[in-house]
Image (tube, each protein chain N blue to C red):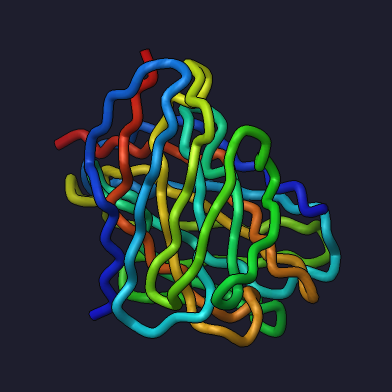
Length: 115
Length: 112
């Protein structure tokens, strides 16, 4: 089974802190994604990566950056956390070949609270 | 970009009844329409998908229908059970783009 793991289930940080959210997948998938999930807004794409060291902005990249140094690992970075970044963050991965045919496998999520 | 609208946002049904969730999309180039189920405390998981050359697809108690002319697709769950209680998301990735757009989600509650 594909497994996507996220470093923390719950995280509490203070405004202005630098925050790292880590995601690891074990199925050699080329594509990896970071979403945030908020009530009434569904899943919104922050960033995605289709190869090592490659990244593309999603729909809401402001305030975030990402890093993909190894194929299995995709990190989301909040350079200076703000209260409006309090949310559930979901990582996902999929195999290559275009998004139209590829199932995305999600991690369990990290609930981040910024005080 | 793609715009996906999902309705209703919440749905309560009695156990054994049917549930229907509808999504509309904007990009006529979209040709693959997955549905994901998110149980409490877990990430979403694909439960069924449909491609543009098919009008309907069934898998036991769940089915998805697609109307490309009207640009909408629906998830149908029959004989609902308490374990069907979850949040359901539709999605529509436009052809040629790597971004995928999810609907806003439907929280389904099946009342025993």
